[in-house]
Length: 593
View 1 (cartoon, rainbow, N blue to C red):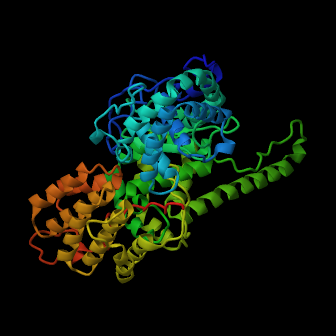
View 2: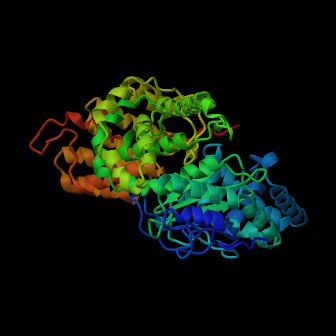
View 3: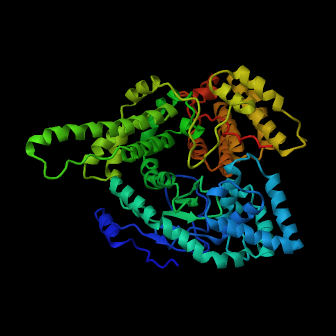
């Protein structure tokens, strides 16, 4: 039974005291508690999920009954990913559920209703389908209510898309008595938490020591790790809710994907440092033009701050990675005359270690994170300086020679496929259909993009949700093709059709932003502001959307510096002329047969 205090062991606490404020990795097994939102870096400000306790520790390791209930329902409906690698707890719960289903027709009916909903809302056939339900679970109250703890407009988009599942989950949970199963398993969950408490503590302490920053330097912000053995240990569900960072994970053989958890923790520590310097970072806009062919998510190719954050984090990961090459230690008691030989061997080992680190940097650079080498070199000096990252990050940003980085980026041969992202994790796949249309549009081939998109157009009475979604997205592609071809009337019509037909918050938001920009170019400022505000109301949840819409509300769009409403030439409506112009969001993977 977990009974350790919330503070770290004496040794770890002493180590962390070197950077002034001790981190508290509070291990507990508890149901969710409702919390309120708090201030943080300039990201989408959904209200904090109920899993976050505003009065709790800065960093916590917990379990959650609503997440357990949600994960159990997913398991009952065919979620088998990672089953062979999972904790025995997962099989035990599934057996308990199957036993309840075997003796109760009502339970089977409640299960079937829940599973039918899941089947009808399966969009990608990937972990992304599961993550939206986990996101919803983070906003549910403890049983028996299992109700959303905030208004739908205050929840992230992925959770709102399946919010109607909550009543079905409540019925299923009651029918098989998941609360009773939970109570019998609390000891097992405590044991799961115990296995990763110390490794997680050590990761956080080590990261803070490297950054020379305390974990609680930003008041009101929380980093929460939720242990849930009913989920696959192969993946980590990591997400950002305003100032709060939540990781939902599962262990295999007492270990979690610590590198993924650390990646999210680095975001938690570093995001506020760079987003507070967004205006200074915007001067690196020319870098974005060099990575158009990189296999990056759109947010990195369109947002200088997002790109800079990720490059810095990848540089830190390279500097601190386990290279697999053991450190060389000069044997004790060696003769002084032999020291040059041992020093030579030590340098050889260090050279091999550095080669491994540089290989990681080169890989990240080929992925499109072209500022990684710059930050890697800057961190070498940072490690020699007693000042923490909070005090030196400004110099790193302001000292960057943008022209030099552009020149370096132009010489890079980019990879053709992207690595998985812990905060997104789309499955790589061959581009086809609308995916390929997007790629053609981004590489300057609007004719091919239009040819690929047109077959997906349907009338407004499409007989399937997927067909309707594809048609809306095809209109979004064709609208941008029309802009490139200097046909604003067709573009506006297709953007409006997308707004009428789509339920995708990202398509809706960017359609409003494009319409706002077109209205700005037509000197219809009031109407343009209304469109930007509509974009903000869609709550896409992505920073590039929010920043573009907020800029539009504050300042009229002008793709050419010095453009005013006295300029009649609006040729620059071509979105490729604007580094912030979006592509459609990365589409879902095809549903498996």
